[in-house]
Image (cartoon, rainbow, N blue to C red; front, side, top):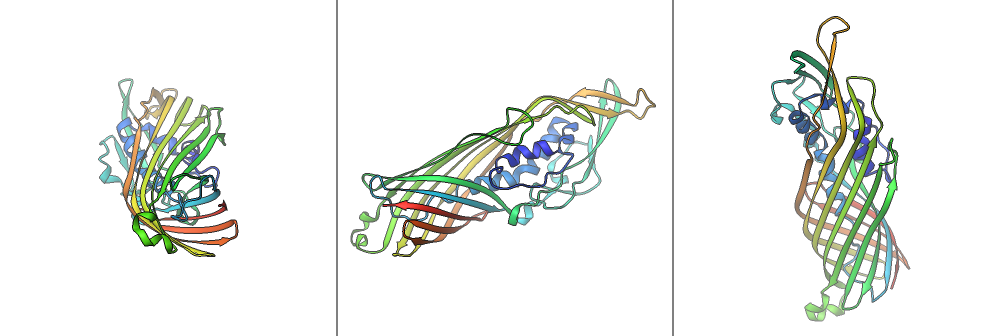
Length: 347
């Protein structure tokens, strides 16, 4: 369904447009436990990739600014979703016998242009057998097969070789169907240069720092009422919350024009996806009209929770053209992540 997938893509609304597949909302025709398993498996690669992308791009040097020196950076990170996550093994989900499929696999969010499998729901409504069919959503064709996360960041030098970093996006309305559709993000980081701990190293181009950073994001997506088709909605709202943090030891070789940097550390984060509103399913009975369909109020799945964590190693380079910097890096982890950006740096 466009609207549910757009909720997820609303997180990326400032950086790219994508093709959404029709029919996702019909997964809710299945029992709540089954629809939760399908939705969890479908969104997991994108959510986990986004957590990794949000943790990237916090630094392009280990050297901190002098007190009250600063830089303003604009960058974008992209997490590569492993290809083995592009397909969902339906039999491995443990679905109930009331939900059957015509295929063994169906694409996940990262499944590109693959089409979704067809499912049949068999249930009992008002004491009589009834059924419905739906097609699971196909994959989304991501740009360069990356889950992107943009960032605008301000870094300010503090006394005692500290540097504070802030990422911030105030409430931004995007292309939802109701006034509730909005996105906001806040991130904060702290870098401490420890080069002086290593004695004579202060006289060399090598700098060493420790970094810790945290990011939170909230997306609310209002869904216009659906009054036709096998599933009807009223006052529907979906919400996505994300938190991510990283701790790293970083080093850089700072030369007049070229800066080489890298880091090793631990990335982690979690996200949740929840829905509210009223959902009504229309099921076929197999009888002649006007008794050919029956309706029932559907149970909305509980919160979908996603987690991603692991160690990461980052390598990167920066080109300095006076105050203007161009940088890029690549992090090796479960969801390998690339980062590119530009910055204006003072002191």
